[in-house]
Length: 436
Ligand code: HAM
Image (cartoon, rainbow, N blue to C red):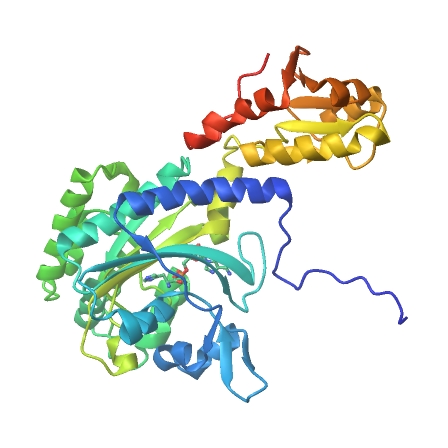
């Protein structure tokens, strides 16, 4: 045997215990319901992809941010840093004959070689969606309303949706005398909202007054002023229409703020872009981001206008926790079954098996116990009820079911015990049987 080593989770990854998984699954179910209510269908793509899928649009520079590796066959692969490119690959290889627009959603882990901190991990989960194939203005409004409804459904109280348009951003940069060269660095500073760095990097000839307003504009009036004479009236008016539609779709206008400075770090967007923040979270406050894009050129295919977003699932949970949202506790078993003697162990096994088939969640004690010890164990595992099986029960076929919160006891046959759960399972309900 070699020396003992203490193996930890790799940097930026986490273990999730039963309580945490329970909470995550509850929030996940709430989110899935919202996607279903908007007619989105779930898909899944592979955990790793050909490296080229991610470098094709973003360039080789992105490799620093990826878990990229060669497999044993010498292929260049990468763990997915996001899902949009993979969904588009799936679309172009297999789904392009489907009626459009296609409404697809996903819930998957992603991997980025980020610097880990609170709310930023190297393995994290995204729940996101893509509306593929010419999303109409109404489709766009619906998708953004869906984004808002997700965080609402999870019970988040403090959040703000920021909405921008890349045609407006680009037109304002053009109209402000910024040449196309050198714009990449400026876009990076805009994306980071580094106003100081941005103004310092501006060339002398730039229209500083207008450019600084990129970061200050928050409403439609401001946007119209900012874009005045920049030649992007159509985009500005499309934003105006979008705002009206969001309100019709039940999005509280107080939750929406215009932000023409949204540049989005990824390289594939054009048109409308949006981000949703939980302002109290500080540096990693961005819960969700997305926008309009067209990745068809990566696949050498004719243009397919699409729109999508991804919600950082882990960040949503951090935000809910920061708000002190009532967290669901993982429930204990419905019944704790214990044999009181070795001779009754077979009867206990049979009772546990039959109750499980009837739909109950059963914790079976693995060794025979004295009644006091058995009840202690039942409360330790937070069981709702306890079933103690001794020689008398085994011989008579009458079992005593004890409700552990009220202390009430009932004498039932095995069939009657099963009937406690059976009708509920048939009705599709997870509820516990009435006790007492
Ligand atoms: P993204 O803004 O790169 O967009 O990521 C979406 C969300 O994932 C972020 O808003 C954030 O909440 C979460 N996220 C990103 N990196 C991390 C991390 N290291 N740890 C925890 N959470 C993180 C996209 O990925 C696009 N594919 C969204 C999209 C879909 N655009 C169109 N369709």
